[in-house]
Image 1 (cartoon, rainbow, N blue to C red):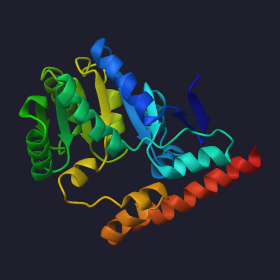
Image 2 (image 1 turned 45 degrees about the vertical axis):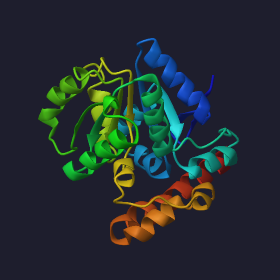
Image 3 (image 1 turned 120 degrees about the horizontal axis):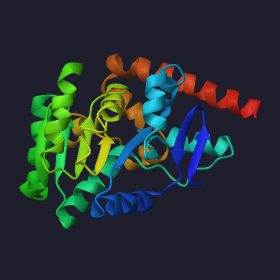
Amino acid sequence: MNRLKFLNTQVDNFSMDETLGLIKNAIDNNKQIHHVVVNAGKIVLMQSDLQLRQSVNESDLINADGQAVVWASKILKKPLKERVAGIDLMENLIELAHKKKYKIFFLGAKEAIVKAVVKKYSSQYSPQIIAGYRNGYFNLNDEPQIAKEISHSGANILFVAISSPTKENFIYNNKTLLKGVNFIMGVGGSFDVAAGKVKRAPKWMQKSGLEWFYRFLQEPKRMWKRYLIGNTKFIFLVLKERFRA
């Protein structure tokens, strides 16, 4: 009843606190939640990438990562309660893992980055929350073995820091092999932020929906196409669906 449908995607209408409650309940009751977040760029990709669309829409829990998605939901008369940013959810879950003695596996990014992330959270909380880690550079044939290693690591939580659509498809295709993990989440570039390689936008830019612009300013050559063209396409999709309705 809390799942809204628009723009060929689905989004669960939960707040951050509600989302954390669902995850805690799943871990404590040894159930599994396959989680994903959607933003403007991912929704644009989902219009033509049917495999990505399936991987996202068949997830157990879908949050709106981008403020643009929250605005779109209001324009389309299906208002979401709030944005549940992937990096904020990740940070909250790491704190929860420390309190509840959960274990986390970190998968993705370059070797130096994922090592820096593990070192940071081991120091900030405790090495006891670390079930294991691995960089994000591997091929399709390696996936089953990696999934088995993660499942056997004792991890309650898996964070996958790989770009879309690779991370969504990895999680979807290996869901059965990851059956030992209670909560599986794609976190995109969050490891880069946690390791200090990329700075996160100030709070006022996050709230005003300009976080993408702050990211663009840091790496304009790499990000211009994703954000400027992608955001324009997203606005077109929203307006098209609004006038169609």
